[in-house]
Figure 1 (cartoon, rainbow, N blue to C red):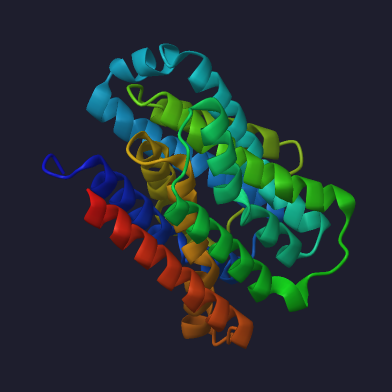
Figure 2 (cartoon, rainbow, N blue to C red):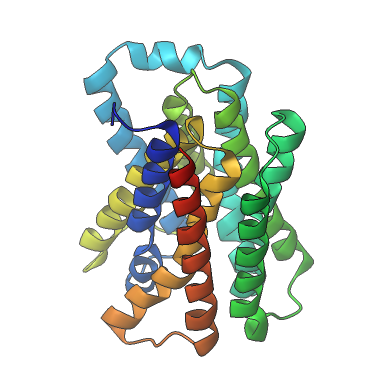
Length: 286
């Protein structure tokens, strides 16, 4: 990694992060736990996993990094925890398609916030990629879009805005390690879920599925996505996460034979090609 450019480091981290995230929807389908139980374990297990690993690696410096993260650390803890909770509650209160289309706005919101607060004006290639991928996401879910509950739709927008603010915050604190702040954010998520959880019991397949999902699809990606914006602009990091739109359904199709729609395949191919071309042009430039 020492010989990589910042563009290569950031792009690789964002890509690896989304590859770990893609089976997430499959694991959620295979689990039998209630929604708030899922939120609780998706907060608690990643918190314990990353916290213990960082204590082993950094020892007391973990707390030093946390307490010296300053305003950016507090902002990231807040946006990270709010985004995690808002996404789940949004899905509970509106059509899933509405939530996913809202979340697809994250790269565009990141670009606007980055331009306003960091004076990082996205180039024409990035704006083009953002526009194409957003249109493709709307196309994928167009037939599923319904008039949803206003609360759920607004929380979907909150999720997208949280992703954008979080990525821009990390970008603004390039010299600070905000992973400890993300760890605290996961603890906040777990604590919040305790007010609504019905049972903590894990039975049968959930004893394997839940820990595997929380480590592979949550803990590893959130570390990588917390570091990636230190090397590439926030909107480029969030662009990669649209890959889950097509790769996630493929996992579900392969394992439980739930075939993706034609719109998912067509729109997904557009998203994959757009991000691949955009990344190639960016890497070629560096």
